[in-house]
Amino acid sequence: MEIRLENLTKVFTTKRKGQVSNVVAVNNMNIEIPSGTLVGLLGPSGCGKSTTLYMLSGLQKPTEGKIFFGEEDVTSVAPEKRGIGLVFQNYALYPHMTVLQNILFPLQNMKVEKEEALARAKEAARLVQIDELLDRKPSELSGGQQQRVAIARAIANKPKILIADEPTGNLDSKTELEVMSLLKRCVKDFNQTLVMITHNEDIAKMADRVVVMKDGNLK
Ligand code: ADP
Ligand code: MG
Image 1: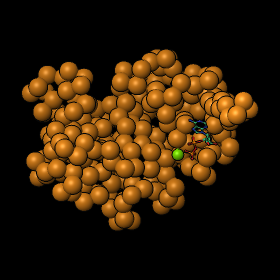
Image 2: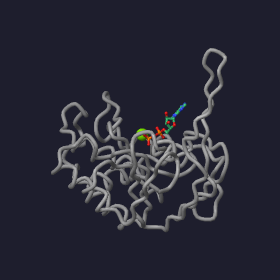
Image 3: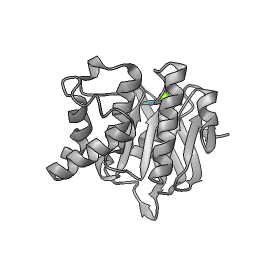
Image 4: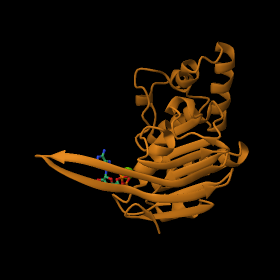
């Protein structure tokens, strides 16, 4: 699905000892990302990358501006209603659940019917090649395997938009490229739009488009 940001702005206001200060984390950002595009978001620490992703996912509310998914204005839509998949650097798996339970969890939250949920979870697991590991706990997996589980969990419901904050940041360079190829295949197979933060230039080379930020602005 196409993503469009219109004048997207986030200002954090902090008060310390009676002193009010404003930080412009994202400054009037305008961008259009077509469906089926893998976008790499680059830039130095503190330039507003995470804040941009938080606003896309609905975890933070913009101070100004609008976010469109396709024709729909989702600026005020709750995170769980945006139909997005999220992948984090630290995997964020539930340690007490098996791989299968982890993948099923969001589907159950969305009240997908039991057999259908199981079918989608297994299909996602097959796609990221972890179908042999469904009964294991996250602690019994390598970093690369854990990130595959997190990706399976994010794609099981076939979201049109995937958002990832340094999804390969904790992996060794070989695994990193494998996980990236996998993400890229998901994007192409399902015509998803993936916006991901990365620090790694080799990873950025695999993106269809690189967006560089500096001090809250597009560079
Ligand atoms: P990046 O992910 O590119 O490192 P962030 O989006 O996390 O950058 O942060 C952008 C700017 O906004 C930084 O100056 C940061 O200190 C500030 N910032 C981020 N979150 C908050 C917050 N919750 N309160 C105040 N300032 C914040
Ligand atoms: Mg960040």
